[in-house]
Length: 223
Image 1 (cartoon, rainbow, N blue to C red):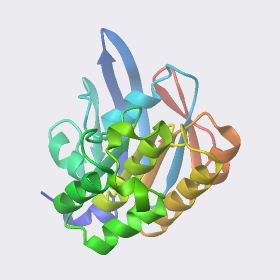
Image 2: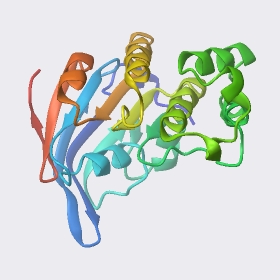
Image 3: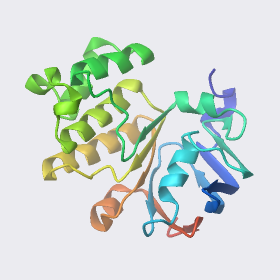
């Protein structure tokens, strides 16, 4: 399935009063959020505020119990599987196959999205997981190398919506700069980026807009 014809002009994310309950606790308590195409949106806020739950809900990974929302033109309650096809989520788990090499992971996801060999090579190069690292099983990589590989997969998958939970974690200074450049290029090409981060200075420079998540609700910071 593909988004509705006017989905390119609709908000990429449009949530109203979204409630998600986890373990009997309202992890989201009536969240409202609107994100336009091409934005790089920072989710700020303390630990436990609901940032991760918000990202997972937008990825179609968590079912809301109340409220409404559309992501990439699809209904968040009834079309979650369709949402997942256009979303790339990188959280505390990178979503990689540990027994496959870096190159095999990229080729697997590349085949699913129709990416060419040159696109796969370019993605690996952009996140510095080419060369000797390409033939190393993901399970033997460092945390930073696994994060780089997961981000390269997002490029290969041509995700329309990038949802990132603390994406700079595990990366060295060069890797963080490379990631920032990658996210800016993705936004310029038409992708939308929503990321949660505690690195205030770097995140503020990267984001085109910020909101704050507090007690399961979204509060405007600017814009």
